[in-house]
Length: 424
Image (cartoon, one colour):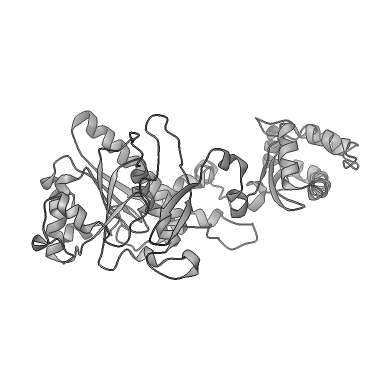
């Protein structure tokens, strides 16, 4: 029996004209209960051909990448390049609250389906446009796959170790960042419409959406014309900081962030090491006095003074070497659980296998099992990015097959096959 619990967007319909850029936006809306109708070209969304595939068998209906981004949606096929398909789309618009599209700027205008034309069909329509650089400006017409967005937003410049060339972070961070901001902007526009009755156009630039990931790099340049570079595991500081960054345990990696607000001071870690006979000479001069003042204020002084860095550099390097040997003698979970018990900020660097077995995620029933009759299998999906007590997030249906709901949707708007119900 279907879950009858009210959803946050259960009375909202979305027409989804996105591909990889924007698919996560409409997934967020769909999993909040919106009726998201994914409009695919004949043959389907090209993202269906992106691996990995179920059982490593390439099939547009078995792309795990596509499945993950398209839960809770329905699918119809329309050829918007043909007038017949455009006529069908125009009949759908008055039934919708939101249109989300990720075509190059101006493309829908050229088809007679731009924002003004859609407003003529439904005056309070909300149209969210997602593109590489936004709807105007000198770069608006430039092609922008994920890698271009990440590069042009400066994220590549900051990713990796100092000796590296600029790096591409894992996954499609540009597509995801743009989708998240597009979903937020769309919901704000929907709230505004609920208050005023006015629709609006939401313009999202992948480049702009990614800029938040630069954190302090842009401000540092703006304030003192210093260009921050790649820092790898050194948290952005140009010298060794014991207890800050990645460390190898006996069975993998942990990340430590010691001596910072919110956790115990570095001296608590020294006491732990000493209890187990692993502190070596760190309880002696000149190491203990430095350890007792290893905090953000001390590190700020090192950042500002080359003389102080030179003075303390060998001491910090030695402390770090002893600490590494201590961490290498313990498992990740020993370091995590015992460290947390001592209020030391230590976390496990999780692998995908770790996450699948993670006791916290499993205790909260985060993973969602969705039945796929066409595959004869139940697949395990990532779960909610947030928990709403009264209108809970949920995967309302498995991801659609290509055009699976074309006839169903067209019946709902009283269109027959003779009026364009089949993909023209």
